[in-house]
Length: 456
Image 1 (cartoon, helix red, strand yellow):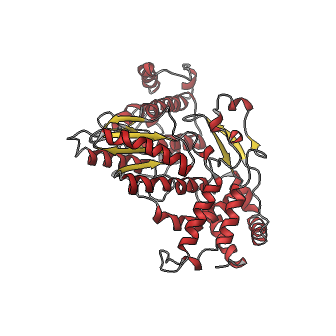
Image 2 (cartoon, helix red, strand yellow; image 1 turned 90 degrees about the horizontal axis):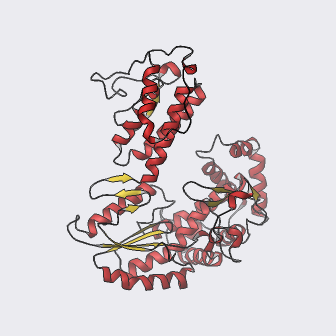
Image 3 (cartoon, one colour; image 1 turned 60 degrees about the horizontal axis):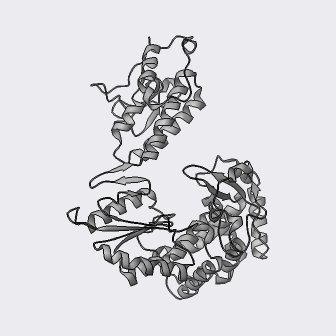
């Protein structure tokens, strides 16, 4: 199919709708939306005449959970990326193995943890026999991806599937224009975003960042940015070569990965030891990436209990200690804000969002006692109430929240299901004491004592 201007217009508008999903209130989306018709028509004009070039991306450093360099494309370029994603994802989705967890609908880190637990129970026959787990981590994966190999792999599959039916029984040659797809791939991969990027933050943020994790130090023709939706797709497409090798040639049944965080399970320790050199050789020769020699591990299944930020136990899953510590620090700080300030409606909405963000994650793990310990305090009850499992906070109606029914929300410490009634605070209550911002975990009782004495 030779793509027409009208088809590009329809696909680009769909890419715009996808790009703005869950981003309607961001500054970049709002600026684009003001002149959206003009911006989209300019993109269509450039794409039809093959004159499109991405604009400089924003480059910044994140430190949570580790130091990492991220490139954020401008919104107009994200629209084109979603357009390309909509072309390629339906084609490659059936080709991926089931245990590829990143950037796929219905999957993600929580799904990866569930599948890891499933494989662990299966390979150990429900924890009645010993097995072994081989962990592999790729060294600077995104910064070492071979761009030419990505383009060749994608175009090979596109041409291979042109005469095959798609999911709706229509041949792929009536859905895809190989020349247009290859043009978009070259537009996104042939440039080096680190040359003309817009740096956000101080140069000191780059101090300590390993060269293997910095795009500017990648060899020419290697390295893609972290942050684009197409980068996640390209990552899955490239590692699918390795996935098929592990499943079809090495025949490791219990295998999965989230980006470059891979596990291989087998009943025999010797089998995994013998397979490791073959796996490393294949990754080096066929995928052009290297295994991080400092991060690979071979552990018995009884000790292989960490994956994707969770501790996997025989019959339950717990969050890792770093997540617990961060949750405790944030909840202490939010409690301090509610005690020391008289928060307005916008502040309460932000506090509620932080609480629900953590509780929504922790609710998937065995963490009820942890959530109850840090949320079951008067400072929170004065403004919020919770559901039965402390997995969601709701703002009280008297502070602008919606009305709730007794069977939906209640204080679990009360026998009758109703909202807890908290007495009013005196107007000068904030002046009666001072409290440090950073309160150690050991002073939990001191904070509770202060809160109890406020409610007179």
